[in-house]
Length: 321
Image (cartoon, rainbow, N blue to C red; front, side, top):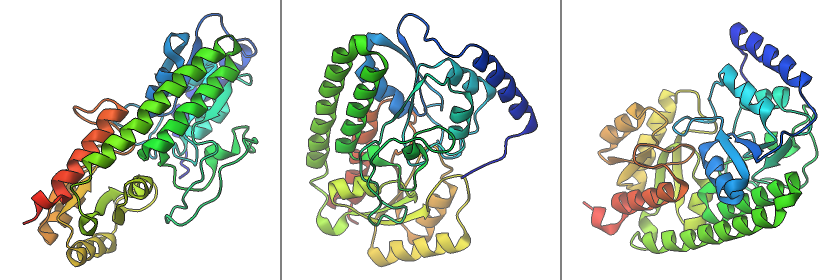
């Protein structure tokens, strides 16, 4: 989803770009300066980097990355970075334009989803993620490729993110390569163990009740990983627009048809539409996390455990009327 910049922001970005071009070419001494697009990626980078990098997320932890409007400070952070970590598959929308325009030519760009086959936006089979050749704007092609970007909601794929990040940091800072790779290996193992923990947590939900209705169409990888059916997403594809009356009516009909006992909002979006659907269909509204953290949830593991608990609460046999 491409957007035009307001004039004041565009002028500020041009000023930063000129300043950054004048200082390009050499990495400052000391720890790597790393920027990530999202708070989830920031957490993964910190796990792999340890004390050997300073890490900042460009998108605040509670914001939707699809529709985030970057302030001028973001361009300055990008211009100073030695390493920039993006998700891939155009998760970050027009923030990628700011990255392309303001990054140093010697900065390393890591695509966390490198090498992971993507589902298509309609959740059919997508393309294989391979190669990291540059696109026309100089970013790796996978940064802006077509496909469902929400891979981290399968902890096995989140582990692949961490391993990719560790390898990228090792390339950017060979003096600490072994340390980056080992920390990444350990954290990836932790995430794979988390998947087993979640699978056990979700066991009380029988196959006939594993139907998820969400606001934001982000849970296809989660559904595949834990044997759920993603019945409906009220807001298909990218965020940033309101669902139509037809979207809402279709979702109410599906909820009634499937006998779904709960629908799920996300903290970064208004819950008014989901609450209306729930009233029409006479079901509960609970909360799942995808792109952003929320109140009381400030880490990936907390987010995934909260998702498991919410699904058991809403769909488990104890939730039956």
